[in-house]
Image (cartoon, rainbow, N blue to C red; front, side):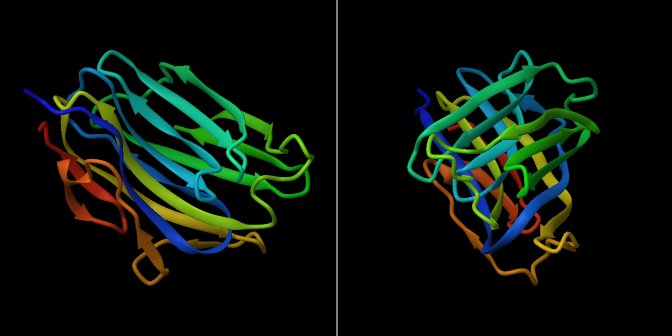
Length: 201
């Protein structure tokens, strides 16, 4: 009998808090067997502040976004379904940008600006990301233990600095891996770029 795997992640942080944007592509696994929950692949800014990407439930792909204040205050948590071109085996671009002047976040997935200038002010009027933040890439899941998939990989990773320039996120950029939950279920191929397959348990 399978063992549940709640809130399991492979996470990699760009260690320095000096970024306002992240972009790259996810090569979605060609073979996906998902039941009793979901798997996801996403980017983030801040420790657990702004997160957006792609999730799969076994019946459909979704493009969720979650924004939380540093103190844990939920600001937004929603998703869109069935964005064109997101299928097993596809390579899908994802981009998150923090507008520090207007205190908003915008998200592009597969070339579509699906989240446009969403406010990231908390109830006290503070920008939850501050002037700059860490960035992260994540493989996640929450299931009953029966899900599996073939190799998936982030590619073409770039980070945007506060002066607006983009740099390659490669192994020369300081990074910190922080797996959680039943992360041993993943077969890790590399941390930067994050690449792994998933076993059922």
